[in-house]
Length: 280
Image (cartoon, one colour):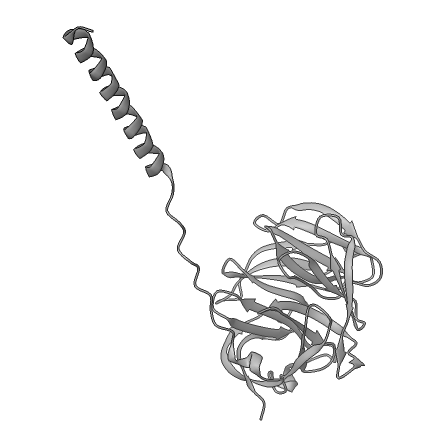
């Protein structure tokens, strides 16, 4: 092999080696860095205690014409479902002013009940119609109806299922796509049934439930229905503001980012931010 030909082959080999090296470097650079671990907030102190009371943190305005059936904090605003024949509505409300930013009124034959938001959709129950509604959470545009048996009262989600109450001691888990009942749990406090479970909210791995006509919330284990504790909300509002007997505590909202908890009632003038504390 002459020197000229050998020199050309060596040059070609070095060129191929350089291309291969550059190709490896580009492939390496294209691999994104590993994501930083997400900081997980410590479990709240109130979970250590069975019996809880509250401290009042803040009062926020609430429409006294809103017969609250469901309340949720979503993207910085309240999503509220109200009840009553001819006055049922779905609302987006400014948290600071109480101003209604968007409202969808429901047909007169429906008495609205609990609501929840899951995967960009709002789900709303009705009381005796055995019919629920699905809306786009941004626009409130109706998407479809769904059916269930019995009455509808409260509604929440664990991020996978819809969880609904019907005024009994039972909570049902529904598939949000098929609305098939996946499971049912019986709520028990010291072995005894807890009935009249109403508005629901999923908070720190627990189901919070208003108990109809009682100034208290029960904390329910989502797996087996055991009541983990009771929150006494006596005196949360001035009794003289309850112009009707059924203007009772009903409405729980939670800010998962901050751990803030809010409660209200049917036609109450305020939404109250509370801090849960051990009841002495």
